[in-house]
Amino acid sequence: MNNKTVTMAHGAGGKQTSELIDEVFKAHFSNPDLTADDAAVLPAPKGKIAMSTDGFIVSPAFFPGGNIGKLSICGTVNDLACMGAKPLY
Image (cartoon, rainbow, N blue to C red; front, side, top):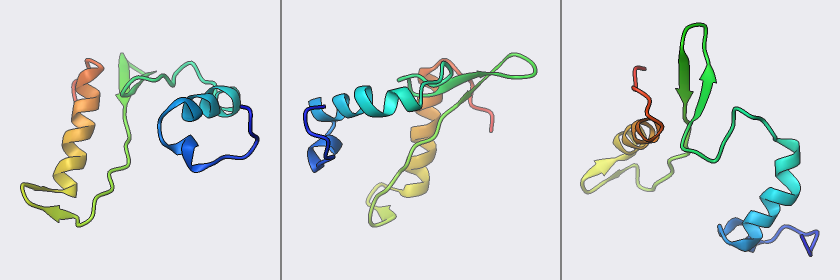
């Protein structure tokens, strides 16, 4: 990272975001169970378990054609399905 100050550009998802993650956060949060995929696949007492979490923020909470509850459930189920998991709970 050329500049040691975090700016708004680091939150835009571009080159600065990638550099911030690679050069600052990655070393401190390195964990083989956490990947860039939609969910983490973790060992379980029997078989495997996939876990996903997202922050769903919209305003207003209810909008034409849906609501924040439906959006969060559909998004989470989609993330798990993309990993080949069978959503159970």
